[in-house]
Length: 458
Ligand SMILES: Nc1nc2c(ncn2[C@@H]2O[C@H](COP(=O)(O)OP(=O)(O)OP(=O)(O)O)[C@@H](O)[C@H]2O)c(=O)[nH]1
Ligand SMILES: [Mg+2]
Figure 1 (spheres, rainbow, N blue to C red):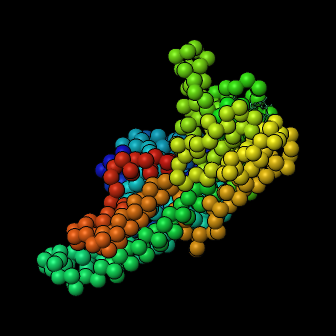
Figure 2 (spheres, rainbow, N blue to C red; figure 1 turned 180 degrees about the vertical axis):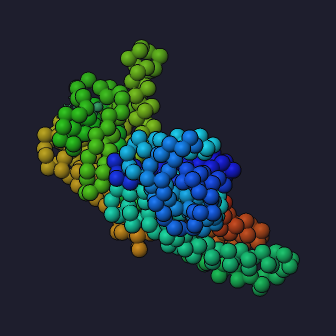
């Protein structure tokens, strides 16, 4: 948590450079910097960088620095700020930091400068998050996507989605306020429904970019799932070309979740091997209790899966038993149905829904699984988002889904026709979810999550 009354400082640059920038923000920022320079605070003119000899309280020289004062509210945080451009040695940064601490300043926490910028209305939450993403951008695509958040393009796009919903809400509320609800001619319900539906489609489109960006920048989880002995660990090893997971002909070999990193079609994939699923009596023995715990982990892994390779064993004496898709499968995950160990039962006819036949000894069939994963991921990532607009976080996707759902409910209510109060409530929910996404106002716990991911000094 940030207490705005305190003055904070932190290095804004990483170690190893010729210059280290110490940033100071808060009510005493200018006074503290001026004190180190041995001048009055008024001597630090806004935006003017001057060479100064810094001294500690006992008059001992600390460094020859370049010092600039930044006067509120024209600063990053909206508070008075100063920057000390020091020689980059850690010992110099340490000595100046100690001097600042002795003046009553405190080291900043992660993201605390940006948090203050947000609290002072300098940045929306969306922009603050985008700044963190820009600082940590690891690719050109990530930089572009983050910048669209920082420079406000993303926000304008969301505002544009919100505007027609707010307009319709005003129309509906006006009729509620004037008690004209019974007069069926007053509201064009079809027009309201059409607007709400169009908004939902546009919101869905933006939500799809969040999913794509998550995969492109964060990578995908591809989870192997199926009954014991179906050949999951064998397939993991074949796909990553390494002897990564234990393979054995006794069922229940894999218990822990085994992960293997891989790149498929330019996307960073984590291949996840899991315990084979079968009915075990956890009270039967320690070994069975361990296996049951492994199966619980396997099921939990499904929740975070982007693609699930669902293996069914051609050699299973009772294949029908494993014919139900895993109930834990999340909606957005792609299920690839694989008839495994096909060479063991060449004459057996697989169920109708099978997409791939696999025999570990046949490299072409392993390649086909690889290609199917690549195709599923390519489909999810889609084309580049227009103008680099991409939402990068789960918080964003969640708010968009809620907004689209509420807009669809509003359209249904308008057409049903339900009383206008219902239409108004759903339109309001949709607009609020978008407002929350931009984060002009956000609850403290959301702020804690967002800013804890920042580096110190930003
Ligand atoms: N003939 C044949 N045997 C296979 C194939 N794939 C795996 N096996 C064998 O089937 C047995 C089980 O393979 P695993 O890869 O350990 O199966 P699993 O699904 O990981 O099994 P659990 O970890 O127990 O759930 C091993 O003896 C493998 O050598 C295949 O395509 N054809
Ligand atoms: Mg296994």
